[in-house]
Length: 281
Image (tube, rainbow, N blue to C red):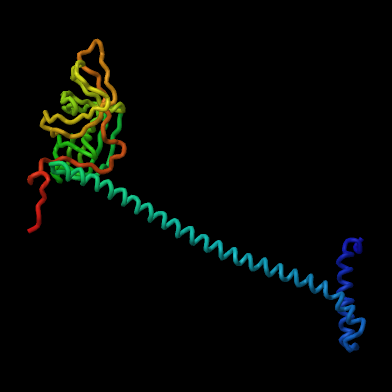
């Protein structure tokens, strides 16, 4: 049973021993041409080749392992560096977008004959009826209740509650908001009221008047709160009720209230004439 299980090992061992014996015998008694030496070389050659292949395979496997370990470490470092670069790219992108928004705000302030205070939006209240924002400046910065608030390209609301370092902005779409407006094309005047998620509606324009979809709505300047001519929105739907005296006009504001990050508070008219700039002496 032992011989059957290990006969291959015994055979290889016997061949190796015979090859060693013949090789040793040839070295001792032969001049280099004897049959024993030739037989020893013939038998030992395949064994040597097999051993060489085994050693080479082990060496190659070890070399590949060392290389893989090095590549894994290098890959880990590259991933870390790529993560840092992505974080820096995100910061640069945010800075670029902020600079572009501020540039747009600045251009709005330069075109209008008013003095503006730039503020950041720090909070939002989007309830079923109330639509308001909180900004990061207040009485200490010269803000007062009732001041109009704008964002490119036009009006978004007005200040209501003002504390020392913050203030609340009532948006045009708030159902408690009312603004005196007019239709730019026909100069017909009405009252704009917030309608929540439906935008705004204009009331008190006679059903006999010509108001069309696409008409631009501006502030009329009749109140002491909003100056005349500020962009408000665009008419998106007009209907005439047989029972009512007035048109049902739905208006979509020009400003997207969901994406506001910085806004301008209209703090009064400019002291210098509009369009002129002071030059350094």
